[in-house]
Every structure is written in structure tokens, then in C-alpha cells.
Length: 102
Image (cartoon, rainbow, N blue to C red; front, side, top):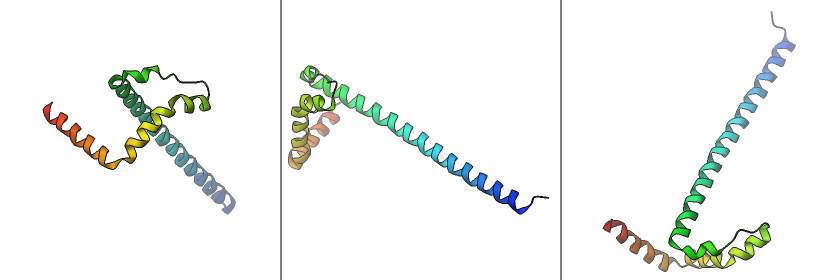
């Protein structure tokens, strides 16, 4: 027969096991999401470089500070585009027309 201490010990072990399983599941889900994000970023980057070959002149740097400096002009262009809702709406409408032609 199981005494109270053994029962408490088994319960504590089971609780810890469930916590570990939850953490492991969360890590797997985060890793899966990270892989999706990386894949999306690569596809978007490839499309941008295909349509704007001059972007290939930008070179990744070995430091975060160097990357900020190297990519600042592109970031500024994209920021202006993202903040100009009228222009963005017009571009989306024009893009929709292109999709209809395909």
C-alpha cells in the first residue's frame, strides 16, 4: 500500500513532468514559428531583390550598428511607404489589377 509521503512524492513528480512537457511543447511551437518566420523573410527578401536588383548592392555587415547604417535608406523608404496609407491603398489597387491580368 502507498503511504502518504510516497503519494505526495509521486504527485510532485507528475506535476513536474507535466510542467516539463508544457515547456517542451512551447519550445517546439516557438521553434516551428521561428522557422516559418525565417522562411517568410527569405522569400520576401528574394522577391524584393528580384524586383529591385539595386538592393543587391546593399551588403550585410558584421555588426548590428553596421547593418543599421547600411540598410537605413531602405528602411526609410519602407517606413514612408508603410505610413502613407493613401499611397499604399493605391499600390494595392494597382497590384490587384495586375493579379486580374494573370
